[in-house]
Amino acid sequence: MGGILIILILVFSAIGIPIAFSLGVSSLITIMHEGLPLIVIPQKLFNGMDSFPLLAIPFFMLSGDLMNGGGLNKRIIRVANAFLGNLPGSLPIITIVASAFFAAISGSAVATVAAIGGITIPAMIKQGYPDHYAAGIASSASIVGPIIPPSIALIVYGASLQLSISELFLASALPGVLISASFILVAVYQAKKHNYPKEGKADWKEKKEAIIDGFWALMMPAIILGGIFSGLFTPTEAAVVSVVYAFVIGLFVYKGFTLKDLPKILSEAAVSTATIMLILATSKILAWVITVINLPVMVANAMLSLTDSSFLILMLINIILLIVGCLMECNAAIIILIPILVPIVTQLGMSPITFGVVMTVNLCLGLLTPPVGVCLLLGSQMAGSKFEKAVISMLPFFAVGIATLLLTTYWPPLTMWLPGLLK
Image (tube, rainbow, N blue to C red; front, side, top):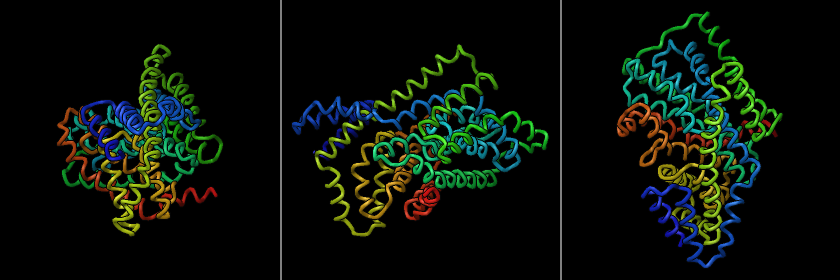
């Protein structure tokens, strides 16, 4: 029945049924086929959302919308432009750096490509960059959203396994920075190869003005991450702090929105949050069904029967995660795959903290790849580019992302060094 369950999910998703309903209906069919009690459905729906760490999700989503509406991200881009505008391929580099900063507030890849790409994609096209390249760079840069802390995906993972969210955030910091740095190197290489234009060198007066104007925007990720890692407040409390900070700065300091704009901002954040929470709720039912029908044991036995090499098993798990990331929403995939894969990797000696980062990086790379590739699809739409051309422009960034993934998988200090400093 386990194979049929997976096939049902893939078929429902392929014909366009929203992922939350695909998971829920597939679970219901399996429950009825196996004669399991239906009372489990409302219980698991509630349990899927009844978690204190998950409260961070709506607040981080709202802070991202407030930051975008309040003009904070425009000022981050201005600061990046002042200091990086003289480099080859300056606008792509600015896009990568600004995405990393925005990721430290929103925790969402889709929010990052919409907020930063919405500004830099038109600017790149206007400056002469091909539209498919603008789409590829902005979409690729956005995947650091769920990797660089705070990360919604890691909140979901940590809440499911009752792990320390702060440790997960620390574990993801170095891989996230490494991916961003690698993307910058690729952007510089391509700029020199194709003779892409520079934005222009700013003098010290312009740099000073950019810093002064963007000071409060730059302080936001510093306050959030500093508060979390210092133990001043929990990630959930940090999410609330980020909302208050973005509201005050956006409304009273930068005056990017008015009180009349709040209903629209709140409704957009509510819709985004509701989508994620419904997926988490139905994913919880599916995770229970997967456990009851003994699918994790069957998958583990199948993998371990192929080889006793931990290196090859981890490689196979990465391939599975990359394929799943191509087909399924990140948070749903995490909930579904945790009961299947975590017992296998722990048996191989991998820390659940490290595997959380490995899983997140894998699924984030899936946001760039067909057939779904939601971030690349959004970036292509914003750039007015053909999706297949944007895929080609994205591939060099995807390749260095894979290299970082392998390093994260096989070199534990990359993820465990920073959490170890707290112990």
